[in-house]
Every structure is written in C-alpha cells, then in structure tokens.
Length: 280
Image (cartoon, rainbow, N blue to C red; front, side, top):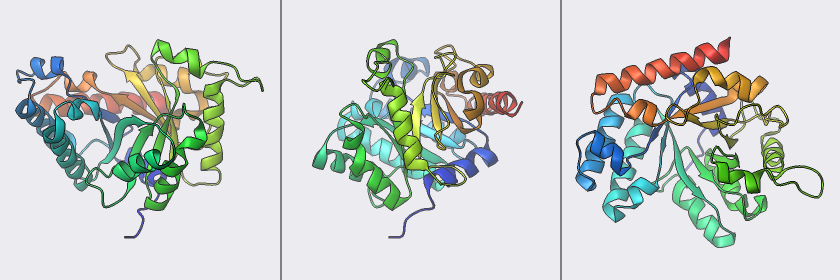
C-alpha cells in the first residue's frame, strides 16, 4: 500500500482551501445533555453523525477526542471508526486526540492502531506525549513517515499543571518544552511546504516569544472559545509562526448543535475570524 502525500503538505493545502480551523469532536456527557441526548451509545452516535454530516465537507481538520468514545467500550469505538472514515472520505483531515505515549513495542502498537494505513482507526495525525523521553516516540515517528501521516507532540499545553514539567529547566538551560520544539524542528528540517511533525501549544498561554515556535511544522492550538482565547489572540501568542497554527475550537462550535445550519455558521465564523487575524 503506497504512502499518502506527507501530512504537512496535505494540511497546508486543506487549511489554504477550507480555512484554518480544527473542530474538536468531544461528546462529553454535559454536551450530550445540552443537545437533548442520552449519555449512551445511541446519544453518542446521534451527536457524532450530526457533527460529521454538518461539517465534514467544509472544515479542514477534525480532532475527535478518543476518550469520549472509549468510555462506551467497543460500541463507542465503532462510532469513532465510522466517523474517522466518513470525515476522511469527505476530504477532511483527522487528528486523533489520544495522547499516546509509551516505550518500545507498546509505543509501536499504539502507532499501528492510528498510523498504519489499513487500520480501522487510521488517522492523518495523532497526538502523542513525549514525557517518557522524546526518543520513546521513535516507533510513531517512523510509521508516520512511512504512511504519510503526522504527529502532534505535547510541548506547551494550556492546562496549568503542565508547567511543572514543560517549563522545568534542563542542565543545558533549556526548558523541557523548548527541547521538544527543537526535536520537532529537526524532524521537519528541509520539508516543504510544511513538515508533518507538529507541537501542541495552547492558545491561552500569552506571550511565548521566549520560545522558538518556528519548527517548520504545524502548531495545534487548543483553547479558543470556551477556554477563553480568541482568534485575535493568535498573533500575540505565536508571532511569526502564526501562519502554521491549527486553531482548535470544540465547545465554541459544538454548543450550537444539534442544528446543522447553526453548526456550519459557527464553524465558518471561526474560520473567517482566524483568517482575518492571521493574514493581517
């Protein structure tokens, strides 16, 4: 089975044509209730199908949060498998938000779950945790390259607890977060128009000018909408790297459901606001 065109190239084209937006698919119990759905597999499926049907043909990137499907066991995973397939069939890219991180053969098995092209859960990219050491991600890096997929590595996350690890200073004077960014810059060296190995960097973190975000790869930026950041904040956070930001909005779009028209209007509005802020 031949590899896909590299994820970075496909992502650049998708954001340029469909708009720079990633919509999270996070069917947590309170959101299901707000849509008038039961917190069960039937509610999960109705929610997911509504989002896919409304947005798959117009939004560039989707980020399903695996945990909200896993909690329903195999039937929940079946809903996720169908969603991933349908999103990709509609021309959207899928970033599986599973934050996997382990060593050796276990990391390789996680990689095969999400990054092997014939897997039922094959996704265009996967979020991963490097905090068993960046080198522990090698099986995922290798398989991503082989299949044309990508990774988003947790580097500077928006949760307050992340700082105790990510902002800790190494003996060489660099923080752990900066070290992860440097590793990713090495992975992406020489790639055009964009490397396939990105970082997760929170849009709520304020001025990050002390960090080199120019990794020649995408920067997945959660925090817009319900967490308090706005598209207008992006240039101040990401500086010259802002064009490579993949801004993620979840509740800010999903709260407009289950009305399909309202979901589409919210997604278009966010994409337009991001474009206006990052093209200025």
